[in-house]
Structures are given as C-alpha cells and as structure tokens.
Image (cartoon, rainbow, N blue to C red; front, side, top):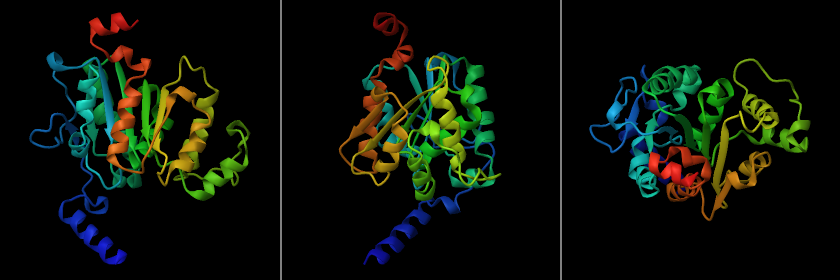
Length: 271
C-alpha cells in the first residue's frame, strides 16, 4: 500500500512539474514575487524603486516544493499582518543547482547583487528543509551578503556527520575526522558554523532557527541549536509541514531584530 501511494505521489509530482530531478535549472534562476501574478519570472530580480520595501527576504523552498508555495501557505500575509516592510522573493534554487555547483553563483548574481543595487537596507535569506540547507551553504561562502538567516527545519547533514559532531561535545572541540574532502562534503557548512560561533555577534549575520517538535529533523536541529542564542530558537508542536513553518515564521519575525524592517514611523517608535 505504501509503495503504491509513493508511486502515485511521484507521478502526480512529475505531472505538476514538482519532482526536482525533472525540473530545469535555467540561467538566470527563476524568482517568484508576491502576490503571485503570471508566475515566476526568469529575468534578473529587479524590484520597482517606488514599491520597494526596506528589507528583502529570499526564501528557498523545500525539496518537493515550488517558490509559489510560499504564497499559497500565506507567508506574505504573515509579513503584512505584522506590519513589516519586507519584500519576500521565492527563489527556485532546487537540487540541480546544488549538484552542478552553481547554487551560490546564481543566487549572488541573479538576486543578491540586483537587490543591493536596488537599495534594500537589509537582505535576509531563509528556507525550509532543503532550502534551509541551501541558506547555510550560501552563507558559508557569502556570509557578508546577508544580514541574517531564517532556518525552518533545515537539513543539516546525515547521521554519520552528525554523530561525529555530537561525539565531540562542544562544537569548538570538533575536528573533522576524516579531514574535509575537496568538493562536496556537507561537513563544510558545519566548519563554517563552527567559525561563525566564534565571531563577534555584532558583526556576524544573525541566525534564527525554528522546527516542529515531531519533525524527523528535530534531533539534528537541536544539535545545531546548541550554538545559537536561546531567544533565536523557536519550537512548535508539529512535524515537517507548511503550517508549522508558517507559525514559526510568524514567531521569528516578531523578534526585535526585525525592527529595522518596519516602516519608518514604526521603526522609530520601536527604538
């Protein structure tokens, strides 16, 4: 029964273009702005100056999701409800970009550089599941591009790597064993995170983490949370699903770190 359900689900995903293995990886990367209109654009991200918010948040969805799902699950409405001046942009950085090693180039060239040129005061990046992994992986190479990250149930590595890190005790005691490999080695993002944890909190990008207490990735996320400020870690009842991520997103955006992403009058009052 389970195999039959899996087969049916895979066929439906394929027919709707959601199966990542069968999706194209165009240059420039597709981006989805909100509200959803004609669908994702393949042009370089160019926000209209008269409509631009104070802050930009790029969100990379999970493995089997599309950028438009961010709108379908009311993430833009959360921003509006909280009165924040944040433009959300869904970025279609799926697994093919990671496999080709072009994830970082596409995000930097197609989204971050145009956003800086457009004059956003802050640039944040976030993602759920695979999108959280993509966010950490991007920060490991281009941390200076980001003011902060919102990680929702991120994938942070397989059991072998996590057991190695857990066995070391405090993260600062961890030495990769065997040594980090050239090319693809998921422990590289933990090596960056190890460095991040030793940096001045005033100069490093902020990291917020949220996950459901019944998520299959909860144990791995708890390990990741050890080096974060407690007030930057959020846990909700539930599993690996959009409603949980939306509620966590709302919780995180209420932190004072987003005061600079309020309209001018609200920001001055908050300070």
